[in-house]
Length: 282
Image (cartoon, rainbow, N blue to C red; front, side):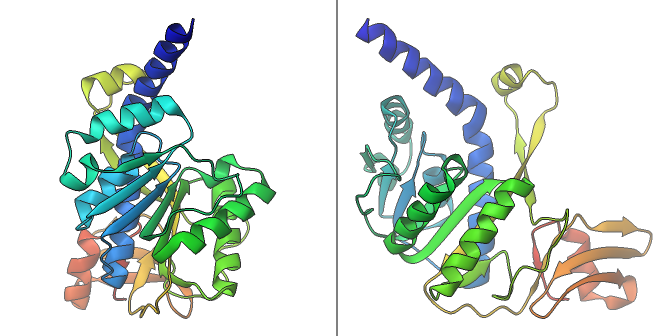
């Protein structure tokens, strides 16, 4: 019976990895890329809290000179599969330490220069989420990166985290180019998207024929060091028309709509290549 249970758990973990790892990798890589672009931060140590099968570690390893990674995951099947997959990665991934841990217990977390919590906080109750957030921030020696689904509910949770940690002296690295209260109100919320290629097996699992999917996510990168913001963040998909591009921007002083025209030269060229979530000087 124990073998049957373990086999069932391992199969579920494999199905989860096939269905969710590409999208999680894409969202973490996009969010971390924005944070690194805004700060120039380089971390050599990583704590992946609620690691699942390790997608966030793979994303961080692709963007940073990682030397040490620690993965916290309470489910044994997830840990086993994550370790197996990482044997095909870099030295830092092959030597990653996997630990059985739960964010809701009272134990402090191992410290690291970069702490990532992807698709974790939204699964907790409000009280547990607040306590877990505090533990994550205390573990982050340089930066804490939080990624959640791109939904109004998840954004509201991220905004709560933003307010709580800014009050403690955290500096916002991304996406916000300011540390004032969020200006989005009503039915509007801050979220972005990354495009993820689908393999043949992935399409079969998802029951679709499209060669890609768009993963919508909200995120917050908080730093222990001051961040100089000299660019605005594109909040919505650029509206492209003949000879002009409309941008909705979150800036240091205000949110504003900007119409960029060909006569704007370098700015127009940058706007043509830009997408929702990118930083731009405008």
